Structure formats: C-alpha cells, structure tokens
Amino acid sequence: MTAPNYNPTELMICLAARQIPDGVTAFIGTGIPMLAASLAQKMHAPNLIPVFEFGGTGAILKRLPRAVGEGRTFYRGLVASGICDTMETAARGFIDYGFLGGAQIDPYGNLNSTIIGPQHHPPKVRLPGSGGANDVGSLCWRTIIIIRHDKLRFVPKVDFITTPGYLTGPGAREAAGLPPGTGPYRVVSTLALLDFDEETKRMRLLATNPGVTVEQVIENTGFELIIPDHVGQNDPPTEEELRILREEVDPERFYI
Amino acid sequence: MRILESGMGELLQPIDLDEFREWNREKKAHGLVDKRMTEQEAISRFVYDGCYIGTELYGTVRAPMSLAREVVRQGKKDLRVAGQGVLELDLWLGAHLVKTLDITYIGLEVYGTSNCLRREVESGRVEKVVEWSNGGITWRFKAASMGVPFIPVRSMLGTDTFRYSAAKIAECPFTGMKVCLIPALILDVGLIHVHRADKYGNAQIEGISGFAFELARASKRLIISAEEIVDTEEIRRYPDRTIIPYYLVDAVVHAPFGSYPGEMVYMYERDEEAIREWVEASKTEEGTQAYLNKYVYGVANHQEYLELVGWERLERVKAAVEGR
Image 1 (cartoon, one colour):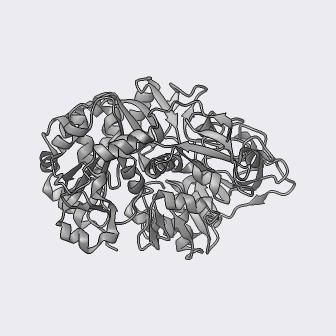
Image 2 (cartoon, chains in turn brown, orange):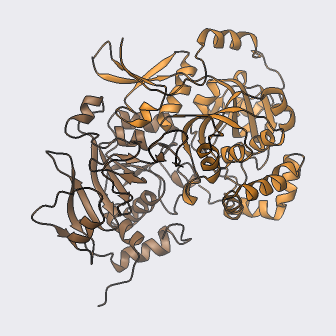
Image 3 (cartoon, chains in turn orange, blue):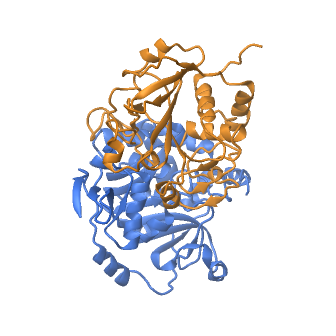
C-alpha cells in the first residue's frame, strides 16, 4: 500500500484532531482549529463539545464554520448563548482545552496576533488583534496551539504578547494572577508535535512529522528547543482522515 | 484597593455613571413611543462626527450592515470605535472615518488580515489604538450595563494586550489575588441588527446573542435594525425572547436583508461571492473606493442597495439556509 498524498496543512489538521480526546469541552478559535475540531468529532471524538466564543456550545460540526459566530457554530447545538456566558464558563474552570493559532510563538508558548515590529503604534504590520485568544489562553485548562513551522513564526521573543503562554518561565503565569494549572499544552506544527518541559516551561520536541528529521525541526526554529533522548514519529494521515477532511470537513477548500 | 499596574492605553471614553443615569432618566423615553424610521433618519439623528460608536454582532454574522453603509454614505467622521468587526468596520476604515480604536479583533476571518485596518493603522491615520480581548471589551459593556465603573476579571493578565489597554491590575481586597480591572465603556451610539422588533424597539434575536445584551445596555443611543417589524402582540406572546427592551432603543429601522452579505441565522446564508468581492476590492485603496462608489455612495438607501444586488441573489441566500 502506498502512503496517501497530502499537503502540510492537511497533515497539521489531522495531527491536531488526534490531540482532542472524546467527551471533553474545547474552546475553538477561528481557522485551522475549526477543521481539527470538526475532523475529531467525525472520527474518534463524537462526544466532543465544541465551544465557540460568541455563544455556540455543543454543535454538531456537520459543515465547517467560516466565522466564530455563524449558524454552523451552534448547528443542532446544546446552547446558543452569548460571549459573556462562554468566557465566564472558561473562567469558572469548565473548559478543558483551548485551540488557538497565531502569527508568532516563543519558547514559552506566548502568542502574537497583534502587530509585527518593535513599535505598537503606528506598527510595521497590523494584525487583527487578540479577539478571544487572550481569554482562551488565560482561562482554559490546556491550550493547544496550531501554527506553521518556520523561523519567522517560531521566534526567541514575540513582538507582542497577545495571548499568555508561560510568559517568562516557571511560576510566571501564577505570579501574573492567571489561574493556576493552566497554560500551553501542545504545539502542533507543520513539522512536529511539541510540548513544554515541566521544570523550565520551555518548548520541547515530542515527535517529528512523517519525513521530517530532528535537524530540520531545529533549523526551522528560531530558538533553542529541548530535544529529549527519545523523539517520536507522528503517523501520516490515514486514508480515512483525508477522505473525511476533504469530502466532509472542507469540501469548499477554504483552508486545505 | 492597591493598584499594582496600569495599562498605558488611553481611556477613549470617559466613565461617567451618574451622567449615564441622568441621561437614561431624561433623554430616553420611558413610555411606549413609536420609533420607526429609515436608516437615513436614524443615522442622521443619532450618529455624529466624533461620537463613540459600536456595532454588534460582526461583519459576516447578524451585523447591522444597512446602518453601517448609511454611516459611510453620510460621511460621519472622526469616529471613535469599539472594534470587534469584519465587513462593517472594514467599510468605515476603508472610508477613512475612524479616528481611534478600542480594538479586539478586526480582520476578514477565513480571508485573513484586513487591508483597510492595515492601511489606516500603519499610516497612523487611525490616531490611537487601545488593545482589549473579546471577553475584555464585552465585560466593559457589562460593567456599564451594571452601572458600575469596572469589573475584576482574570483575563489579559501578564500580557502586552493588557499593557496597551486602559485596564489596571489590582490586589483583590477580599482574597489578595491579582485581578484585572476592566473599565466600563459607555457608548454614545450602538448599532444592533435583530431578527424582529416591534415599533417601540422591543427586540428579539434567534440563535446566539453574541454581545447584544451587554452592548444594548451600555449605549446612550441605540439604533435597532430588524429583519421584520412585528406587532407588539407578537412580542407579548413570547416576552421571554425579548433580549433588548424598548426603553433602551432610540430608533427602529426595518431592514430586510440588513446583515447581507453576511448571514442572518435561520433566515439567510452569507453570500460568499459578495464577501469575496469586498476582500478583493479592499486590497487596494483604489479598489476600496470603487467598491464604496458602487455599493454605498452610488445608491441612495438600503432598498436601492438590495435592488443593485438583485433579488435573484437574495433569494439564493435565503434558499441556502440549512435549517435547525
């Protein structure tokens, strides 16, 4: 059997979907996180409860939402409330996972989606801003970040901390007043799956993607990664994952 | 309460809660008054140059697009804007009407960053930009709706989003924990599009309510546009569905397809092709102005806009609704 063909975005979505267990609550940000949640719900996690910031909870993700407030975010859902309800539910500790993207990430999992360049105003490049990302990264138990892997994105220091990772290292989140026990959990990239070292809170390589070497991951990361003795290998997307992703999740090809 | 840190962003709108109470006592009709009017009249009466204005929900979802276009048509300028937006705020930015921004998110969602936002902010034409999270700005409306000066929350802590906001970090007087104090935001004008309202402004929304509840209660002037104007008897039959009561409302505008090219859940789908037309046009200054000339300045009102779009197309987005 020959391995199916797929592009890096499809791979990243499949890997992110596999990180979502069944029967959990997960705050879903706009873009790739929506595809991952939809794929997970159609594969191994039929009881995934997706939470969308503007009030949709428990939707059946039959078709891909293109906006975090549109009808598809509460299609046959359990709740259609508002943003205060979803954010306050996260604040009370009910949301297990938060899924986010970003333009830049640093070794502590801090995310930037606000500006590129040293100056806030006027900036070199203005990005959309936090949206709900800061709240999700502050209040959900485990944040999973989905991001393309290159040196422009994996940087030693983000230009702007839009969303808190582990800030400056161990104890920094708690010192800032963020709820204890929260923070970045996994990073799913086009090259690898990464997590954060318990002691230093710095990013650590867990597994490389199919056909990717440890050296390639190091070369494409703008800071020093923790490389453990054993680095795993991620399985490529299965025929079934790709079929569902292409035919059911994103047939209009918004992302893949 | 000990203040530990202050965001360096400016408070773009003063927090005067007693004045807000007086306003709500003196300037709002407490009885039932027929408030029906056109977009043209509502915008010319209640939106003014330099006012602080906000919209709900956003750009492709239950957005007050007919009102947003009328703001552009009338050239209301130097707007101070509470920024959670897609197409609606993009139009204002593209028309150079925005002076300052309390920004949470302005972008084109699946189509990426907003070129209008980039041009206006990177050039400095938008003079001040103050950062917030989506939760943060909604809690600002909530504080105003509660009639209190701030709400303590556990968002924004430790980040540059806080540092460039106008929030403060304090030590909680009860627990000693660090909390982020989110200041109340009282809007001069709020614009909200709903599924149905009666002539007095009692308004009902289907599906998610976004931040309509909070923004409505934080606005000194509130313009409601509605897909359908219903008899008050209809409201009285389902009072549990009234999310915005009449006394908050200053104008009721009948706007069928008011959220077009965005969606109105259970009524019509978004028009992807029309959204893409803006995405493409807004990439350049020339394209933006050409689009505005065609779809905003080139038509006198919402009715003419719908004629320009064409009923065949509008029927198509209606037919595309997926149901419940």
